Image (cartoon, rainbow, N blue to C red; front, side, top):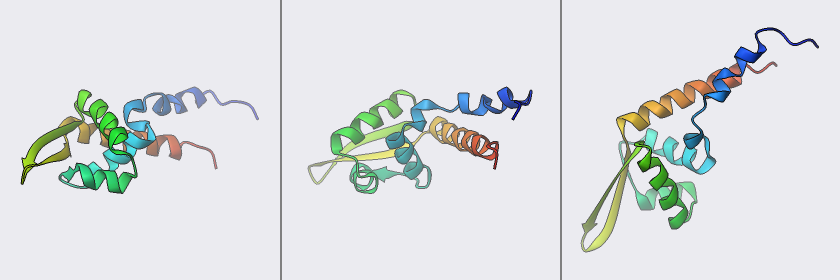
Length: 109
């Protein structure tokens, strides 16, 4: 089947996908944080199935990008870590969702 002249434009949304979010573990983290106001570290460990170290490493990357805010405190002398998406992170996730929808909607049947 001949290529249509518009095909190269159809790939543009895929090229613009935020690769930081697109990584499966970080996508899970972003998705969970997107639907809650905030979550603690233990909740994300349980929901994502990631190890403590793996989750911590991915959160560090998301924090460095300005997508996640990490608040550490002590509760009853035990460390407690709360996480939430920043406004930038929430916006980035919304753009990511729209881009993925566009990529999938543009696929031929």
